[in-house]
Image: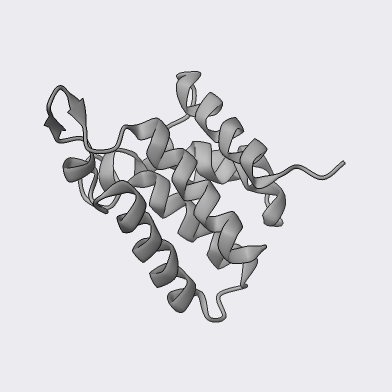
Length: 130
């Protein structure tokens, strides 16, 4: 049974909302079968990248997760070009790349809530690699 990218995106959102995964971990875990690592290994590897690159409110953790898996998928060959594609599409859909900007509340809601960042990161990864 093949898992669709939409199902993977929803899994990532569920993992994020479970309280046991940060944004980076949720994305890497949802895409684990795209790598040669286990979900648990990816969860451990990506543990420190939440809240904008380790709590710096810089690059969104969900975006980092998608690029990490892209690096595994491409075995490091051509990853920079794909990372740029992921980043550009993510910026178009979410409105920013930095956690601080994505969480900025305007009119009572953030620019792009974490759940949407996670969903978009997985969807964008899937669209690029389908």
